[in-house]
Length: 66
Image (cartoon, rainbow, N blue to C red; front, side, top):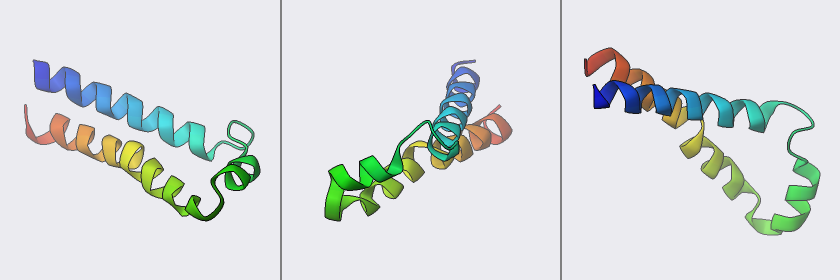
Protein backbone atom coordinates (compact mmCIF):
# COMPACT_ATOMS: atom_id res chain seq x y z
CA UNK A 1 0.00 0.00 0.00
CA UNK A 2 2.78 2.43 0.90
CA UNK A 3 4.59 1.68 -2.37
CA UNK A 4 1.43 2.55 -4.30
CA UNK A 5 1.03 5.85 -2.43
CA UNK A 6 4.69 6.78 -2.99
CA UNK A 7 4.39 5.84 -6.67
CA UNK A 8 1.32 8.03 -7.12
CA UNK A 9 3.06 10.88 -5.28
CA UNK A 10 6.13 10.61 -7.55
CA UNK A 11 3.97 10.58 -10.68
CA UNK A 12 2.01 13.65 -9.57
CA UNK A 13 5.07 15.63 -8.46
CA UNK A 14 7.02 14.71 -11.61
CA UNK A 15 4.13 15.78 -13.83
CA UNK A 16 3.63 19.08 -12.01
CA UNK A 17 7.34 19.95 -12.15
CA UNK A 18 7.47 19.10 -15.86
CA UNK A 19 4.43 21.25 -16.62
CA UNK A 20 5.71 24.18 -14.57
CA UNK A 21 9.07 24.09 -16.35
CA UNK A 22 7.76 23.82 -19.90
CA UNK A 23 4.58 25.97 -19.86
CA UNK A 24 5.62 29.40 -21.17
CA UNK A 25 5.23 32.25 -18.72
CA UNK A 26 5.34 30.27 -15.48
CA UNK A 27 9.12 30.45 -15.24
CA UNK A 28 10.99 33.41 -16.71
CA UNK A 29 13.92 31.52 -18.23
CA UNK A 30 15.68 34.70 -19.40
CA UNK A 31 15.72 36.08 -15.87
CA UNK A 32 16.83 32.70 -14.54
CA UNK A 33 19.64 32.60 -17.12
CA UNK A 34 20.73 36.09 -16.04
CA UNK A 35 20.79 35.10 -12.36
CA UNK A 36 22.55 31.75 -12.87
CA UNK A 37 25.13 32.93 -15.41
CA UNK A 38 27.59 30.13 -16.24
CA UNK A 39 25.72 27.67 -14.03
CA UNK A 40 22.49 27.89 -16.08
CA UNK A 41 22.90 24.41 -17.71
CA UNK A 42 22.68 22.96 -14.19
CA UNK A 43 18.98 23.96 -14.23
CA UNK A 44 18.31 21.27 -16.85
CA UNK A 45 19.99 18.63 -14.66
CA UNK A 46 17.92 19.71 -11.65
CA UNK A 47 14.76 19.75 -13.78
CA UNK A 48 15.45 16.27 -15.19
CA UNK A 49 16.10 14.71 -11.79
CA UNK A 50 12.99 16.28 -10.28
CA UNK A 51 10.59 16.16 -13.23
CA UNK A 52 10.66 13.31 -15.73
CA UNK A 53 12.83 11.07 -13.57
CA UNK A 54 10.32 11.17 -10.70
CA UNK A 55 7.55 10.51 -13.20
CA UNK A 56 9.38 7.49 -14.60
CA UNK A 57 10.28 6.11 -11.15
CA UNK A 58 6.68 6.54 -9.99
CA UNK A 59 5.31 4.82 -13.08
CA UNK A 60 7.75 1.94 -12.67
CA UNK A 61 6.80 1.57 -9.01
CA UNK A 62 3.11 1.45 -9.89
CA UNK A 63 3.71 -1.03 -12.70
CA UNK A 64 6.18 -3.51 -11.24
CA UNK A 65 5.93 -3.22 -7.45
CA UNK A 66 2.32 -4.10 -6.81
